[in-house]
Image (cartoon, rainbow, N blue to C red; front, side, top):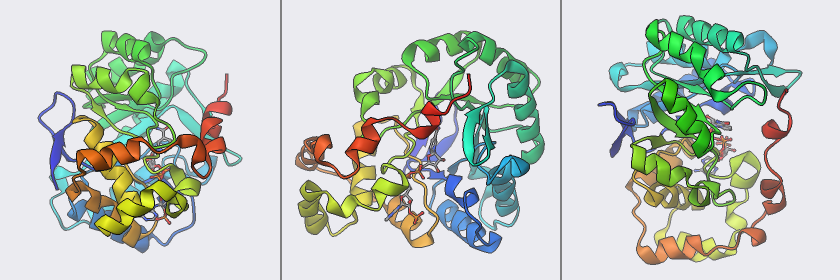
Length: 307
Ligand SMILES: NC(=O)c1ccc[n+]([C@@H]2O[C@H](COP(=O)([O-])OP(=O)(O)OC[C@H]3O[C@@H](n4cnc5c(N)ncnc54)[C@H](OP(=O)(O)O)[C@@H]3O)[C@@H](O)[C@H]2O)c1
């Protein structure tokens, strides 16, 4: 798979990563999850995105990290290429995600992730900016964890340009993970994508195919039908190729709980779209898409943030 740099570091990551969230939101035989992770790593999707809060409930916080660590231990390929990108600052209580963003809680979850991963965290990302603490206050425990060698590289998620800049004053940032897909194109207009390019930050679009509900209905997008027919590929692959072509700093992190879907998505790494194809996808009217109402209304995590 083609690679891109993890920010200004020398670390090469596959041009598509893998979002492991769904492997911990449902009961799944561990063997099935291992097979999927081993297959995506073998295909070159070396960045695997996880978080402290990807779990069923508060009793198994860090579940997804533990699963990845066990899968990695059982992986016969080159383990040194795999970059575990975790996030911290949220918990799952009664099935709902909530921010847990006090500086003390951030430091604690970093320590826990470090212990779970059995060594320094390759990439630690602050999951959401706090509504209660400034970026500087949130970054202080992160700075401390970097100095204590618990974190190798730092990223931020769901941050605006102003917040990224504020974070950069305290710690070197290598990645930004914000929502970006056909329905949510804010990074194109709010300047974050351009800022990442200028600063050599890698941009990791989350929910790159619109998330579970929308990804199942891509076949209903009429303007995509012609392209799907002409290219003989899935609409999912087309949308991922479209995202990657948007900027040299983009590394999408598609999620999938099925091996065949995960491999289909990763094949987008080899799909280069023509200027006309890019234009055709760009021209798709968002308000005509299935589920646009839901997409426009924001995501549930944002609305359920603890203050
Ligand atoms: N930073 C944040 O705040 C944040 C928030 C949400 C998510 N994330 C990250 O982003 C990652 C991806 O987000 P997501 O999983 O919500 O959304 P997504 O990647 O846009 O979509 C996932 C859905 O697409 C389906 N799918 C994937 N490839 C497919 C294919 N080739 N053909 C048909 N269906 C396909 C999957 O189905 P199956 O499961 O049936 O295969 C799943 O339902 C997460 O895993 C997580 O790491 C970050």
